[in-house]
Amino acid sequence: MKRLSVNPVDWGLAYSMDQAEVVAGATRHLRCSGQISVDPAPDTELGVVVVSPDDLRGQMQHTLRNIDSVLEEARMGRENIVALRFFATDIDEFLNNYDVYAEWIAPAGIRPPQSLIGVQRLVLPELMVEIEVEAAA
Image (tube, rainbow, N blue to C red; front, side):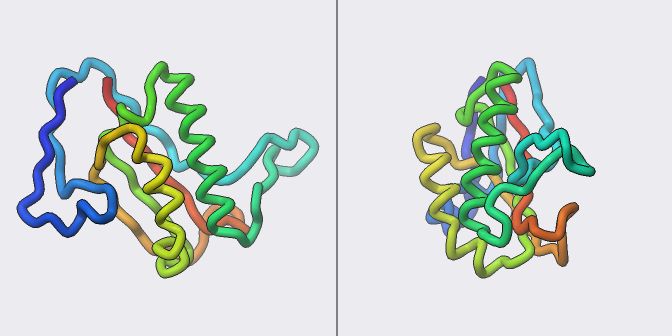
């Protein structure tokens, strides 16, 4: 798979992102549903428990670990990510903790295009962040 960064302006580089990216030669494409900071809890109503309730930083860390698990199950890694969408209930708090994502993606050596979308609430009231990922290999 080959990647070509597209940056008519370079402000996004400071946020570990390209404005766009051309991906060529990929034969597999993964579209991941929104990942959240939950762990299995079979004895609960929804079968999950929120990890780090009311702690956006902790939720980002746990959600990114969950994304690693999805990528691994798909026989991919962070280097295969081609796009991300962040949904946050508090944009300012998300940006204050953006280093969690930047440190997580840095070893992959890529800057996938991304969007940050503010939402009123997520599927469970304690959740503060949800992340959708697309990957290709």
